[in-house]
Image 1 (cartoon, helix red, strand yellow):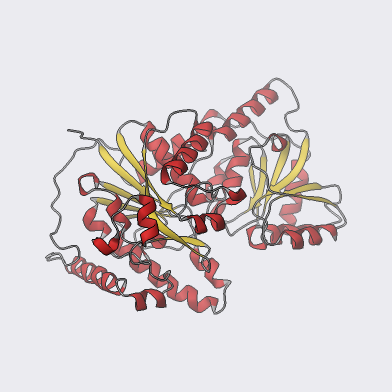
Image 2: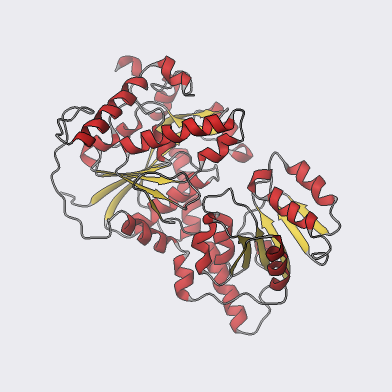
Length: 464
């Protein structure tokens, strides 16, 4: 009998959509499996063809889950250099155009058989449980861990009646995360706070960036000029991703930064406006389409400028540090993890930004130590994750009793009874189409439709 723990990682996106909740859980699954002490299953959304065409870039689509799984494994193994032996399963999902997000359809906890329901990791637990209707996660799994990736409150504040929406969403998030998760990890203090949560960056960088950084360190040690280019910024080209702050800093300090040459790389709905704003500056700012950050053309840049404060933990900042570059970024809670690295220079105001930017051109980046390089790796991120949720200790399988009812346990603890009642209210409310629609669910998403069932090989819900 297999005595290994089983970890099921549920996430809200999948490749080829290169978003954080597609990429980071994939690496997490690979490195948890690599340790060899646990069985790991990654549970990702399956979209029908019409939604794939909207979500996935470059007209990449799949006729079957097995075809998409092959694509995902190839992409991953090209980057990690070892076989990805963990399991991949798909849950039915639909794309919400108004939320620009993938939402689950039906009870996705059923994807994992009860015999394997040890530990569930919910990547974006609020997102996965807003409209959940089915078994209570805490009842099915012995341990449910939520990892908060996104500050949804900041996003909704930009919409019509944003402050009111953010107020309501804050309490909705606290409600569902509280009733469905035993432990909550926030990647940084830039996210919504949750009772009893801990702040810990449990993400690492693609190993390719560390390999680039090692080559640069070797060049520096050999006396070669490792960095021959100036400054750059890379990110999705929308104002809220740091472009607004960066171009404003450049505009306000054109005279002091007249010698600066800056390259911007990105694509997005604000590309034209960013290009027009860059042309108005009395300095050299070149705007380019999006490129892979690991592309050869980025290797020789010395300075990464990133004034963004909307990220929870900025992936491109971590990648730039891994490549041995100097990073000038805002002194903000989203950058707290990066302050331990000597090449991360933070500023509090415009004057400091100008000072640090000019200083970077007169100095060479510090050579990171092996320990500092390790801290950016997925091996270290996995160690931090296991320690944060007390899974770094020897595993002893215990037979835990589960209540026969999914919701109303006979606990004598008042707090537990209140939580059980609260979970029951959510279960009832999420079971009616009218109440689901009021809170923004996709129409008819209580059960997967015939098309999704056919593509995933599920029994038709009409026959259940």
